[in-house]
Length: 460
Image (cartoon, rainbow, N blue to C red):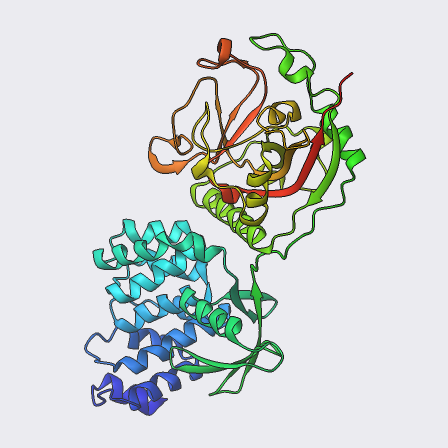
């Protein structure tokens, strides 16, 4: 190390391929932080690109005490190697160290800043992202490309991601490696070990999907891996007997109402559920769970605070996701449409109504039955669906729209998740009064048709 120190300070050493990497490895292994701090200031040193990966790997893997000792040294952050430290901190999710370096005003080339921006955004580290942009440390090209990548982040958030174990915690791989691992995992044969190789910096790794272990080809060090965020498997709807369904239906039907047609609800008071068919569709369920994931991602991204929507006790068939105002609601339809919905889910493109062009649901069975066409034997079809109401817009007037209203004028792309019309005065409704609660969903993926009921009407 003393020889290396003399060579560098006397400018008798010119880093070349191979030797530059070895010199930096030697300094890092010796943990001579004052020396490394001095090396980082040597702007005249033209280190070959492969040398930089050594610093990135070190910054990603090194324990916090070692990094703190390094950062105590007084060095500037203009050299490419200092930029590699920043990239390594982002990959290793050493966010406190990352913030410290950013405050020293490091200047990043486009390629480096693009990767770091994406790492920050995927880790939800808004403070560091804002700091980089505000300090002008990010080139315009990098920012534009990073924003393009982040625009597709919602769908990436809904896919399984990969993490590696460090100490007692788990660290996420960057987006590109995580996607590569997922592609290899999904295309492999689960009955036999699947080996895949990838490279981070100068280090190559081999992954065994059977043991879920990655091994460094250089050091032989092994770490455990895990796959997280997989969409929940299909959950069969809990049993619902016709007798229990009849109780729910009658408890959620009104008597005679005041209004232009008071008999509409009264005629359904003696309705009886003749049969209940649970819907089991893996395709529709996957689409529904993807909608769950996208709503959560949207709420996190924009800091949306979802206020609870009251659910009726009769419709709490089992535990649902209250953070997304998930609930059971009725939908009236005809037999042919019910079969199509059973196999393909609800489609908002074919729906129209007083509060926008969406799919209409209601907690009031008598309201849903009004839209159910009698079959040949006089029975009617009701669907009891799981619905993600999310962050709703409450309306007191007629709406002509194909999507929910904007939530914030300052965020034109941020919309409410649904529309709810509650009983009470409502401009444009019959008699300017809304008698039932109606929920309008503008994305059919936010619904899952859990049960198809055949309902008979009895007189007296």
